[in-house]
Amino acid sequence: MTIPYRPALAGLEPYGAPQLDVPVTLNVNENPYSPSEEMIADIAAAVADASRTLNRYPDRDFTALRADLADYLAAESGVRLDPQQVWAANGSNEVMLHILLAFAGPGRTVMSFTPTYSMYVEYARDTFSQWETLPRKDDFSLDLDALPRELARVRPAVILLASPNNPTGTALSTHELTAVLEAARGNGPSDAAGSDCLVVIDEAYGEFRRDGVPSALELLADHDNLAVSRTMSKAFGAAGLRLGYLGAAQALIDQLRIVRLPYHLSAVTQAAARAALRHSTIQLAQIAALRDGRDMIVQRLHSLGLETAPTDANFVMFGTFPDRSEIFSRVLERGVLIREVGPAGWLRVSVGTPDENEAFFNALEEAMR
Image 1 (spheres, rainbow, N blue to C red):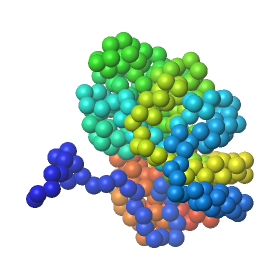
Image 2: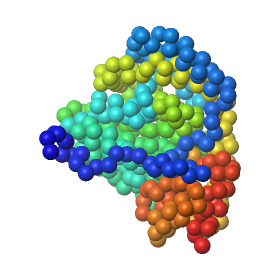
Image 3: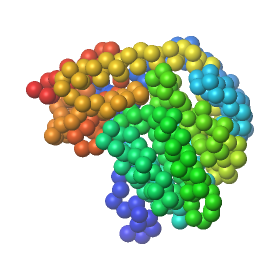
Image 4: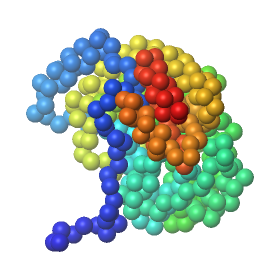
């Protein structure tokens, strides 16, 4: 062996949910509806126009796209950000990586609350950051009583929190968001005495939240240690576009500009994303139907005697099973792919079309016999 592999990566497998050729795929929380024909045509025209100048580098600060994203957030959440407060990258995965490159790293700790998104630990690993977790309570809410003590002990540079949480679907209340931000005061890393922890709220599924459930964007004006991540992959029906974005104080955004690779968003990506945003009203009209589908899935799972985690996302975590792998396999044998993820005994299903949801229940009921 002559290649100098990193010892920390020895024996590890790359992240990835199964991609199998089955009739119904409900395992990666995609929007089951394709973009509208109008949106497809607009993207095609925008990409063709951008292609005429592919011999030139794109706008490395993607100023027009940031302005469009700020307009979208104002319409969706009611929070108006200056475009300089918006950042974007190739999926929210790259946004998170930029955050840890800028604010974590060797000698610093990243903290989250389990169960949560399995990529977070990989972001920490890839940026040579320490990783620390606290368990959630039995209802998957945060243990706010333990939080101030644990933050004072760990002194994390960055706290990663998904709301709604993946894989549970649990959303954070205003009380929880405020409590985390208050506990973060003065408990930043020891090499930056007196600093606050940077609190990152990952709202990849934010558009699916129920009426009255807040977006953390509402707290940005009063907390310069808060960052709120979004994506166009889920509610927007643009997972293949790979466009994630972030709202935060401009001073925080300026640090991300330091660690990003040059011209990290291609001219084609910028053009396609801007065209997609022009059709946000039509794309987001699907949200009500997907919320209804989610609630129907919860009710039917309860009718089968199963538990579900409270969910504000486009998926449902359900169980519990003595052998979840057996149920997963039996459902898969019937042509439906769901996800074996989360605490022991639980499975997760994404909301599909009405026909896909019905196929899931047919498969599940047979698998449980």
